[in-house]
Amino acid sequence: MQHNEPVTSGREAQLERTGLRSGWTTGACATAATAAAYEALLTGEFPDPVTITLPKHQPAFALAVESLGDGVAMAGVVKDAGDDPDVTHGALVRSTVRRGAPGSGVVFVAGPGVGTVTKPGLPLAVGEPAINPKPRQFIAEHVAAIASRLGDGGDVVVEISIDDGEEIARSTWNPRLGIVGGLSVLGTTGVVVPYSCSAWIDSIRRGIDVARAAGHQHVAGCTGSTSEQVAVAEYALPEDALLDMGDFAGAVLKYLRRHPIPRLTIVGGFAKLSKLAAGHLDLHSARSQVDLAFLGELGGLDLAGANTGLEALHLAQAAGVPLGDAVADRAAASALDVLREAPVAVDVICIDRAGGIVGRCEPRTR
Image (cartoon, rainbow, N blue to C red):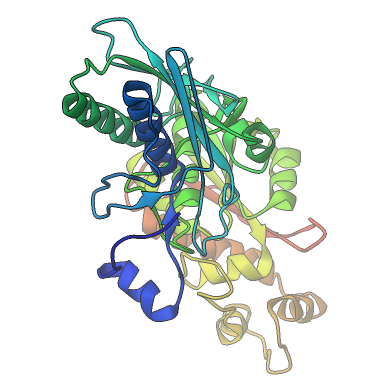
């Protein structure tokens, strides 16, 4: 698989300067595999490499597998996510194309390793294969172009599969979102931008959509698995009311501002949530730091001897100062500033590394 044009604009130009390599989404790979399989179905020959047209690129994909039978063709490409830590990097994405009923257009089927939607709230109906709208559009457009070029009606059944997709999906949000049996075929531009975290943020949004569709009145934005355990222990929330927020507090709050749920509990480590208290919306250590001076001011403490947020907490506890409660209260205020006038009540729980609650505040609105 290769890039066949220079990277020249926006974020991609920044990547070129830093040496990070962009890659291709599962949707782009599925489009390439479908284009190759459909052309082989009509001509008996697989284009290899196969070139597709994306909004800003025309990448060429080498075929990893191909098979031609009576009325059916299959082609597959290996996903190259570039330098992004994508769990589907290296996965083999296959498309099997068969003749469809006259006038049926392009019909999509989930093959092995591609999930099926079982809960409302996603951009696909319950029972549909988890092939998102944009990849479906790309695939349908390429089928139409090939059909026009080769004089065919373009009525085909396209089955997308991903080798080992069901196993890979266990490390994604799919089970929680009600996508069972495998991965989703994703991508809006076809391009994976390294460390853009767009897939994680998209999963946060889909998690909120699913929670709203299920009628949940209370969700928890959690920074990790220990935080989730605390949220469940405190409130007995169901799995689809737990948002794997990670470091992306801003993504949760901005989406809830537009798509509110009555109550949000934010649960996370004391040090991480101290960053939210200080007004940071991206809590990753590479993009925001614990402000010890801020914590000292918040608790009325001299923290000159502290090197970490955890040390600051221990000093406060030794002095009998409820710094955890103060951080929780200020973090809730920061969250409400982002939510603006959205009808969402916010409370915050700060925990230590063992999952013990070291600070909290009561739910409140702005």
